[in-house]
Length: 251
Length: 310
Image (cartoon, rainbow over all chains, first blue to last red; front, top):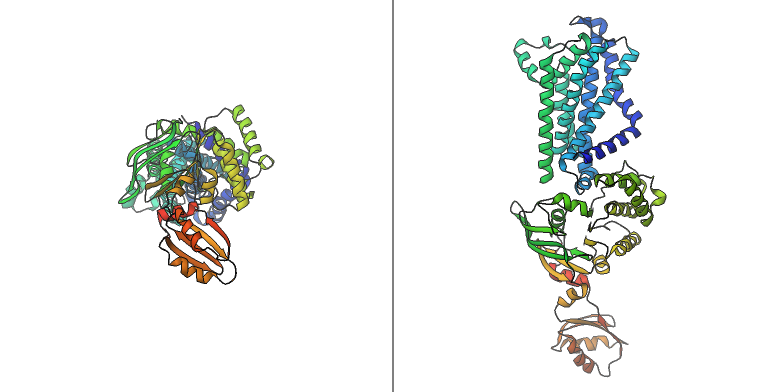
């Protein structure tokens, strides 16, 4: 049933392999700059946050941010480009594969980009900084990273499906996606928020993702509820993205 | 008697209050090259999108090779090839990879599609460029690659939606050659704005406008549909054209007359009126009388009007 998805995903991976070096350089540069500027540069001024040095506090969030941003960006731009510029989605649709196979391929591609690029940033941070963690922490962390990347990949597919203009995609990213990432405890603990706001912030899947991922990697904490929250969000956005894409294609 | 490959019956498509297809009835014979002409917004693309299962009709039926487009979309897509108006080549894949991806989407076996792709690249004159990216190709080469992609899985029906738009005359003729070479082996449904293209390639031609089929037949049959009026051009020697223009213009059988220099173009009610003209011109210094051939463009304009469509 997923023959079409596999063929399109393999096509996307072939293109990624061809551009791997330039893709990774571009994707690693941004979080690494933030890490060096804030983690190292501000460390002396900030000191310990939740019992760990600031550079350790932000490292998991930066890896997660890289992964989910890459997943979102790949899905949204790839789908928009293939639908509106290159018309390849149209050429797929006149073959025997289903519309669902096309959208699942694009979700898989975004997810794969997220995981690869998140790992690349993690390896670079691991190589050039004193940031270390036990291996079992990594397994806990992956329980967040995998559904988190899937969630953002599905969100990207929804954006790439409903938005026809590139400037709208840019605006949504600036107004919605990046604030959701940055305000979810990536650079500061949630306790910094006023008490009245914390309940609402915790409802956001991005908060569960970033806070849970950090605690999993730094302290080895397993926040089961947070994992479930991210997982449920990923499943819901998956169903929504398939439905919305099918609806759009039937117009 | 040939069986129909494409059939539509009362096919209607509404976009809100706009009727894009209006009770459209059509039959296209198996193995024929069928041309669909119509001005912008006539409904050609809507028709192709329904026939290729990309869009659902509001009412009516459409079938390809006996399969209903609503119920058997997947089976139909297995047997059709589509060359769309847009250049939908994947610019990040080489020419060969473009064809391979398409073969895989059709579920073809690797050994089978390797050989088929070799044949198609050779046929389309692209074998030497198979490892190059489409962006480096000329417009004509890109078009040939799109056609090759549509043929990878050996379709029984090929839809060509304005396949030569934007190509120079040489490239257009090359594409025509390929289309002609495929005649008989599959049904070809072609839409085009180039009337010469339809005339050169198609066994039968339909003209549609405002979502309706307004004429169908061979090129000659369509030309014959025009009123019986025939047009002759008469070339005079010396300065006599002016005098004979007045004389011919006064004859009841002359519908219209125009003079340009020594040449007079007369439109007659019917071809039988020619004998009256010849009699009237007895002794006149006539160099030549020639019949002005009616073109498909005359038919098209007479049926769809000469107003520009936006």
